[in-house]
Length: 182
Image (tube, rainbow, N blue to C red; front, side, top):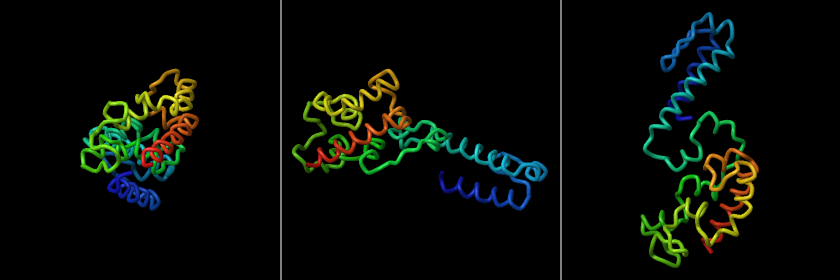
């Protein structure tokens, strides 16, 4: 949660605990409502803050790659996944991908371009969904996605919303990042 919304939440929770009326982002909860059910009052505050966070997330000009994986803040909050160094590079598109590194003249590996060994632009999406050279390495990920969603390529959100798919996604991400830095 963005820090300013977290502050709003903490202030609202304090007032609820004290039995005082709360006003946060045009949400008004009376003293009587709080005294009748303080848990419901906290839930109302949380719902309103998540709505505001979602609005900001949808309108932001940054983080668009990550937004494709996590379009819903409310759903992201219930996913039980552990993000790591490898997966995060795919979730953000910032990592050891020739396209990203080439933008900063940081490609110190075997080539000085944004191309994959297959000749196409090497982005996180290309590696994850399209590179023909990695078809065999993606096999288990593809199998899990097809069994659960019925399609490949699947929506990016499916890669993180289902634990069986996420497990294979995480394995593939780790293998690729380690392999590409050989």
